[in-house]
Image 1 (cartoon, rainbow, N blue to C red):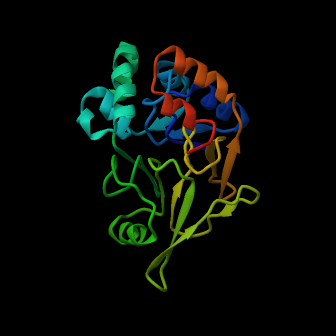
Image 2: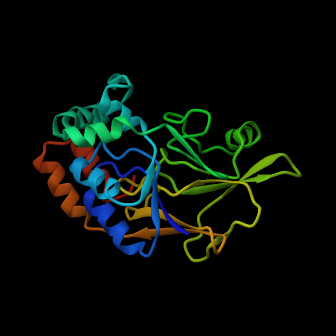
Image 3: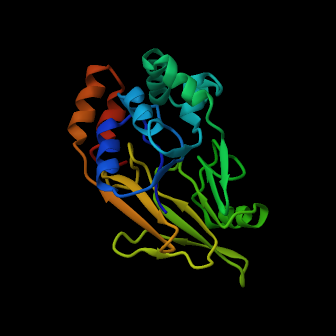
Length: 242
């Protein structure tokens, strides 16, 4: 089976469409949350995923738009975008977000938005934190998002440490019997200095994981955001990937 692993779409429909087109063929989508927030097309993004074969978990922005998270925990730009999204979101799309779990275990794979110990809020970017999670939770491979940074942690049993590996976009990662925490990066708002949409492909038959980037028409998303009166900082950062 080939699974398209995506996270942090954030209402960026042109970016999502570029990923869905470029990543083919795949058998199903695993989405790691934050369908909404920041971007101008929340309904379209939700519909593009929910109408196909997929699994999904909720992100903190999804909870924010539902009123399950205090909106004042978000910065002013994110808060303004969430308030706009609350008015824009359709009834069926709202109901879809409300039904999403905060974690999913699929055999040896774990799906969460942020981290296994704090599924909605923890920024998992440090090897020491990853090591603690490897020791406390039962999974072989955990897929996480939230940071908008593509990265890979590997558990090293002999030393009791977690190694941080940067994505190799040229060569697939051999899974073998390794324990990993994988962040595919963000579809809709990358923050690693590369504005291209990020995603990963898990091939369980081949035993591989691939990291990918794909360009999309950033200016279309920016134009839509301006038309909707979304914050200028959110608009500008798309073209620099920060």
